[in-house]
Amino acid sequence: MATSEILVTAFSGPRCKTRKAKTPSVEELERDLLKNPDGTSTSPKVTKFTREALSPTVKEWERDLLEKLNVTITPPKVTESKFYDARLLFEPGEVILQDSGKIRETEMTLTQFDPNFLFDDVICCHPLCNLRNLEATKSGKRDLFLCPNHQQELRKSLSEVLAKNNIQCSSFTSAATQEPNQFAGYTLLISLLDVAWHKARTLKQEAILNVRNFLIITNTLLNPDVSNLAFLPYVVEILREYLKSDCDVFVHVLREIVNIILSAFGIAFSWVSLALQAPESKIVAATFGFVSGVVGLVVFEPWVAFVMAVAGTYCGGLGGNGIAGMSNGKEKSTPKGALYSAQGFEDGRLTVSVNRKNGKNG
Image 1 (cartoon, helix red, strand yellow):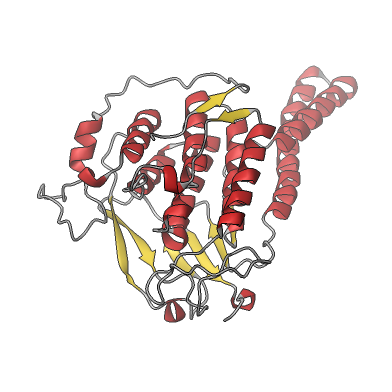
Image 2: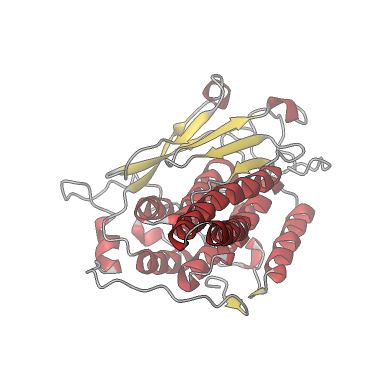
């Protein structure tokens, strides 16, 4: 099966305007991804996936994102770090998964450790479930685990969010019925999004950065478990639809989807808000600006009313953003039994810390 199709029955916002700038072909960008700065080929020992290993699903995602994001430079290579002893890695407290800074020119490194290092066994992440993953190894990278019943509950929750927002999706089938290695090479999307969020503006930048963070967290804590990767389409497809329609509603849906998925796996995720675009902000800004303008017109001269309206709208936006922030603060409260907390920052930094008190058997 190729990627799941999303049929939008509402929120048909204005289409994105494409720029006339010359963009390298997909084939050129894909070819360049295998080259070092000196033009030599990349060693297979460096990258996790060669270009030939990309699944049809990931190739389609990449081709579409390259076009919609108008990426005109070669994204950096994606490599995995050595395998760290998590007990030593988390000894200082938080671990930096991605540092801040400008666009990475050569490569991005994804930190690798055992997410279940506190436990003897790999147990379902649901706080009330003690089912063990009998197929998990006793050492190495043992991914966070959801039992089949709670995976089904997660799918139901995601479907409810999409239905609530009038977004109809074709079937997101279980990993067992998908083609082998359906998401092979998905980590290459991380570098593509890392380039794109530096170039984007306002709400689009926010969506791209947070999906990049979601994919990094997925690589660090949730994969290569195939069942866990089956939740990738919910996030990537919503991002694609947002970039196609430029409708702000999709960003709010994306935020809810990401938080539901990560919370189910015991990860408290902090969404990075970059744009003053929340509905609460717009309502408060418009109301405050209108009232200020009317008062200025009645009491003072027209030019004073104009200045007061502009100032009122700006201050109202700040106030509205504060209201949205308080609302978001409730959303970002740590889920019961959360083992990890992931924190994103406006400068692109991404950190993760472990809550040792929430261990079930460690």
